[in-house]
Image (cartoon, rainbow, N blue to C red):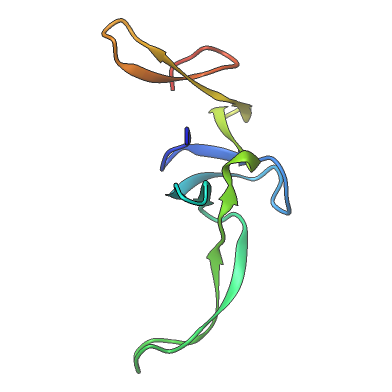
Amino acid sequence: MKLKKNDTVKVMVGKDKGKIGKISKVDQEKEAVYILGVNMVSKAMKKKNQNDKGGITRIEAPIHVSNVALVVDQKAGTTSRIGYKLDEKGNKVRIAKKTGAQI
C-alpha cells in the first residue's frame, strides 16, 4: 500500500466526497485507511467501569484506499497518484506521478 500515516488525502467517492484530512491509521490487511473527522459513524458503547460513560459515540470508520487520493498541493487541493523512484544515493523515494515531485 502506498499511503502512509499522516499523509493528507482527499476522499474521491462516498458520502464525504471532497473532504480532505490526515490519515490516522492504516489497516494493511483490509487495505483501508482511517481519516481524522471523515466517514464518522455512530456506535453504541457499553460502560466498562463506573467512571466510564456509556451511550452513543461518534468514531471514524475505515475507507478503502482506492476511494482516496493523496493531496500534493494543500492550497489548490490537487491530487495525484503515487509512484516510486530511486534517488541519486540509491534510496527508494515516493513521487507524485502528476508532477514528478518528491513527496
